[in-house]
Image (cartoon, rainbow, N blue to C red):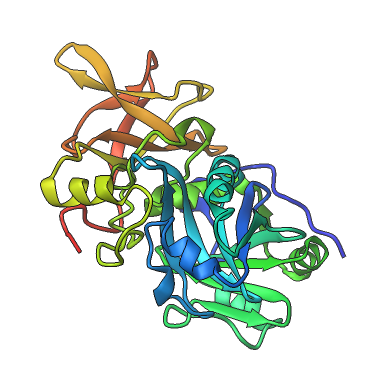
Length: 324
């Protein structure tokens, strides 16, 4: 059996009730060994010691100044710790983890022989239940079935992240009688859900709160020290952060090239912020994830730099005014 990846990209409103996404640009850092939990606890923003084999944690890996190398989803698989993230952030994060890992009993590497897909939509559970008797839920978001790891990511469009060998993942895709989309559709879902999708040029550019990571429960403010913790705490409790992550949308027939968002001020346009990732549908709908000034009004008139593409801020599924 084979499968075909759709070439025409849908807008958010056109996404079917069940579909799969081939995650060719997703990978993971794997940590194993006697001190893997102890070591990782001192490196990342989430509370690793609170995790178990059925839990899913959001988190970030920062440098000593609190700038984010990577935003990841943390799970345990077959005794190893996995930091699932875009390939675009993996090298920088991996190099930094390895640098300090030489002092601990831990093996750190890019996860080997693993592929990733997602099955998404309101009817995703139904699409998978014919092949799998056990699936994760929001209560137990990670389930291991033989060698296959299933991760449930809740949201406006529910997602099941599936991890296994490349051969098995391709077999799963071929067995599903649903549309299969490329990686960019996953980026669209990250944009609408407000989970940061860092690319290479965004690495080490932002503290976690500039990426709304506190709003997706990716920062523990009670776990104790970790790399960059002082900056993260200062941002949270002293109100020093002046930027935030936004979801922005519009329509255009133009090619998306500029990584800069501008804001209209009277008759003039001024730089408002930088694009992290973007998505353009076949019908001309465009979606951007961008870091702007945190006080940018929801009604602000925005555009891509030197473009006639008018953009508007979209609602996110969480509040930025709540503190842990």
